[in-house]
Image (cartoon, rainbow, N blue to C red; front, side, top):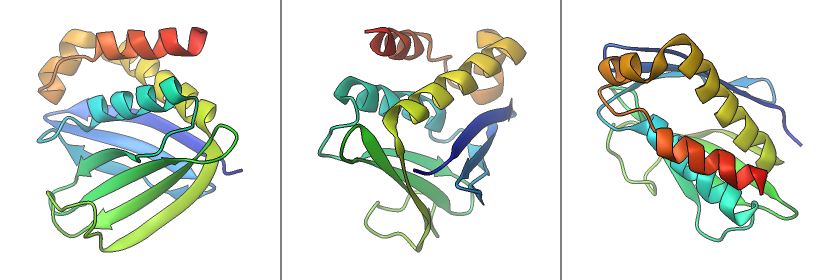
Length: 155
C-alpha cells in the first residue's frame, strides 16, 4: 500500500496551492479557480466513500495549472482499495484520454483518501473560514458536500 498525504496550503487570488505526496512522489500543484477542483475533490471522495471503494467508473479531479493541467483518476480496486493515477496534460482543458504522461500511480485504502481529504478541508476551515474561502477561491465553500462526506464515514 502506498503512503498518501494531502493538504490545502493556501487559497488566494483564485489559486489553490495543494501539497500532495504519494509514496514519496511529490504531486504538489498550484491550481486555478477556472475550474472548482476543490469541490471536485470532495465530490469524487464522496463517491468513493459511498461505494466503499468498489466502483466501476473512475472518479476524476481536474486541476488547471495554466498552462496545462493535472488530472487525478481514482479507480476502485479490490477490498476497499483504490488506484490513484495522476496524469499530466499539456492543455488546461484537455480530454481525459489525451494525457501527456502519467506522473504517479499508487494503490491505497479508500478510507485513507477520505480521511486525508476531510482533514485538509478541516484545516482550511480553521485557517481561512468559509467567507474568506469564497472571496479567495471565487467558489462557494462546499459545506453540504463536506457534511455529506462526514456523514457517510460515520455510517
